[in-house]
Amino acid sequence: MTYDVVLIGSGFGALSAAALLVKRGLQVCVLEQAKYPGGCASSYLRKGYIFETGATTLVGLDEHMPLRYLLDELGLQVPVRQLEVPMQVHLPDGQLLTRYQSLDEWIQEAERVFGKHQQREFWEQCYRISRQVWQVSLQQKSFPFSNLQDLWQAARQVRPGQLRLLPVAFQTVEQLLQKHGLLQNKLFVDFVNEQLLITAQNYMPEVNVLFGATALCYTLFGNYYLDGGLINLVNPLVDYITAHGSSVLYRQTVRQVLPETSGYRIWTNTSSFRSRYVISGIPLNNTQQIFKDEKVQATLQPYLLKSDKLNSAFTMGLVLQGRPLPEVLHHQVHVPEGLPLINSKSVFVSFSHPEDKRRAPEQETVVSVSTHIHDPASHIIHDKKVLENAIIRLLTDKGLITEEQILYRQSATPGAWLFWTAREFGMVGGYPQYSRIKPWHMKDARLDHKGAYLCGDTVYPGQGIPGTCLSGILAAHKLLQDHF
Ligand SMILES: Cc1cc2nc3c(=O)[nH]c(=O)nc-3n(C[C@H](O)[C@H](O)[C@H](O)COP(=O)(O)OP(=O)(O)OC[C@H]3O[C@@H](n4cnc5c(N)ncnc54)[C@H](O)[C@@H]3O)c2cc1C
Image (cartoon, rainbow, N blue to C red; front, top):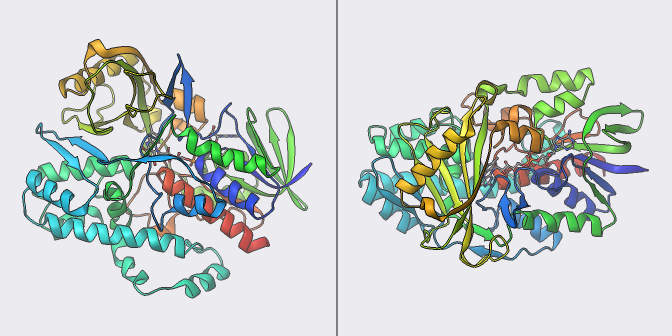
């Protein structure tokens, strides 16, 4: 059978694109190497509990944001709980900082902890930019431009205020702090750096203000929790695709994609498929390995980042018995002395909702812990227990858990990420922000300017579920614009 579109991988980017193409009446087939969908934003059952694979925080469901757009386009509703307080941060000096959703409440909290100097001005500016960024990203679906039609479309979509965003693409977050006289405030600098790391995957000298403001302000938008885990954000997309007569196939590892006279031949570990168009939803590094075509190889080469510019993660799943537990579900804990073996300076901790009986029974809680591992190819972890023990000590010191509460624990290194997602080096979280890579330097959705396209967290606009969702929206948009 020849499909209209074959999509490689069932990550959130590819599923977003697939569902939008299905809505337009196309016959699609999603090929996934794992036995369940969702990639880094999914959930799995082990020992009777539901653990998250990677992502735990969920934003993007508010007006003018990608997930809202996607669900509205598809007519889908997802039963989310909105979190009253998005996050707490355990700072290196021992203070506990609460990231309130209301801008005013947050500024008061930031002033309490970091001092009054320029906090209001800094956060008001960042919030204004982040709101504009989300709005413009859905208005300008042809960005980054890669043909004349994109430019024509962009010109037609120009709205007042869009061009005001341009200068901040040239400014780093470090320069913004300097402008506000905040670079001498070490506590604030450390806070901003570790917050940027979880969203923009890099520190302030490398992150431009366009992405940085958006990353720093994600707690000022609606933050949501899904009972039963993030698989319940993924499954409605899979159900939508299959209910419309298209397919999502598992244990299908795409090994090679070859152009043919009228489309593509896609070879997997067990079969081969034909399609008119193809969308790769796997990282650029992996895409280059399966598209052997010389032109494609040359196109991708300038965009590829190697291990020393990438991050993987050390992740832990815990099951806790009994109470008390923190009221706020998400915590970032700073580790100024660095974790052993990997020297990571912060740990992210997410608790399952106490009323979520699908992930754990009454009085039990599933906890997801993750921390960055920079340059995963150079950090082979031989003894996971050293890291597990250090993290548990840290969480008990901060009063987040007690050792007696732990019923079960497991952990995963970059090797496990490589195995689960097949992402080169086990890299996760997308391509980090780098100051030399402006938004318009990022790879856009067109791969060969024929019928092959890209989405996922290594192409524009990058990291996180909302970013990958937007990349899928853009890939579907460009494919439809080019061929229908
Ligand atoms: C520990 C961790 C914590 C995170 N926390 C958050 C968070 O709190 N909030 C947030 O928004 N984001 C978070 N993220 C980031 C977010 O999860 C990812 O950026 C996003 O889910 C990536 O989606 P994707 O579609 O780009 O790719 P992926 O999710 O990687 O999907 C790619 C899919 O392709 C499959 N695949 C790979 N190679 C092949 C092949 N050759 N053939 C067939 N299939 C293949 C993989 O199995 C995978 O399912 C986190 C990520 C991690 C790892």
